[in-house]
Length: 166
Image (cartoon, rainbow, N blue to C red; front, side):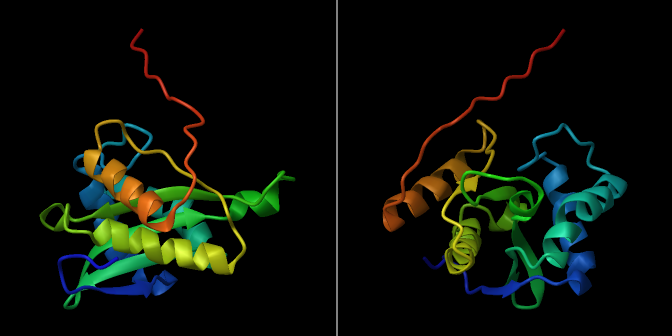
């Protein structure tokens, strides 16, 4: 699955911190991909990187960056840490974040990033991915549905999240 752009996908490393924090900070500006209502501050982007992304990088979990020329335009990250922490009935990957810069959205970048992650997960014998997608993130729903259809994957909706104002 190729995007409509000429992009390069590479495995992220700890040395990519500045680019990853920038992408997280940009995603926070419209709360794209986050399960918490995080304020779009650089400090929140740095904390998210430390709490969510660094463990994935250290554990060599699937974390990928998309580049257009020499600019990081997107990232995708999933965690395999729960498999070491818990006795699970099956190995799973937890989606952490997939995002692209606003001007590169709806061009197949996230689909290409997710496809690369799935390849690595298959190599690691991980056959289940659990992820949250905001109900208003139509592009992510479409990207995931496209991957499911092309790869003939099974999809189960296993939960609904609710937010109640009290």
